[in-house]
Length: 353
Image 1 (cartoon, rainbow, N blue to C red):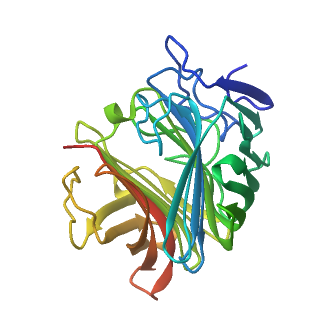
Image 2 (cartoon, rainbow, N blue to C red):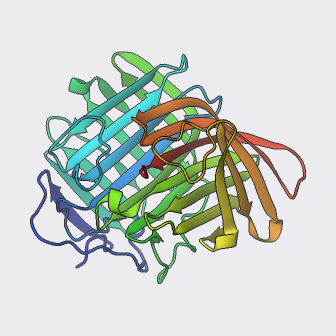
């Protein structure tokens, strides 16, 4: 039975295996949120990502459950030889940041229908539980030695999708060559209840969950990428605009309203994302500064064209000149109509020199 098959449980050890691995890039009838690699060697990565941004844009939390090595994806919060790690970061209401990393002895992932559950175990145990229909997720953190415990919940309000189409069999899962992506929860009503270093950290907000994987080192696949998700008035949107090392551009656009998908596409005309304001160099390189924000032009199907600007409020995580994650204000309109406002979490990788 392949990894990620419905009703299937796999265990990933904390050390990389020798030999090759096989990646899944074509969707099945189920298993949207399951593992997508046959094994984790020293050159690949497979992770599960969750975040929540408060409605007032003052608080945020992000957890990523990794199965990778530094050679496959060299962006851990702390150096580690473990394949199985958890990265936790967030923003307090006063703007102070926190970041923690948990190293696990193994990861246990179970796939039931499209949903998944995972447990990263060791001295502490943290993980998530998802329903088979992707409607609800609960993420639990039990790491008292690292100074963080608690949970947060997601109740989905937007249907799942793949990069170029809906959550059904036969869809490509490559958002770009060698990079897989499935978006189980594009938008959710969320509630966070955790304790960080003895301080209660509780808030409601917009939640999100997806996963990425790759069958070769991240640096071999990416020159730059702009990714983000947000809620703009009644619209839930997710964007991806990606440059490969050879200069080819790849895109993915998603929009839904009232629980109905309006568009999910990777066609060239479906979306354009570009930096604006100061340091708006494109293509972005390691020497580019941080832009004021990003302009998003997205085809949302029969409803027309959505144009929005996302403007940074806080940097929530950064890795030298290579990576930045923000939370920010989202403002825009559809077909030039009423001004809509909202919130977003978004990121930029700049690998090219």
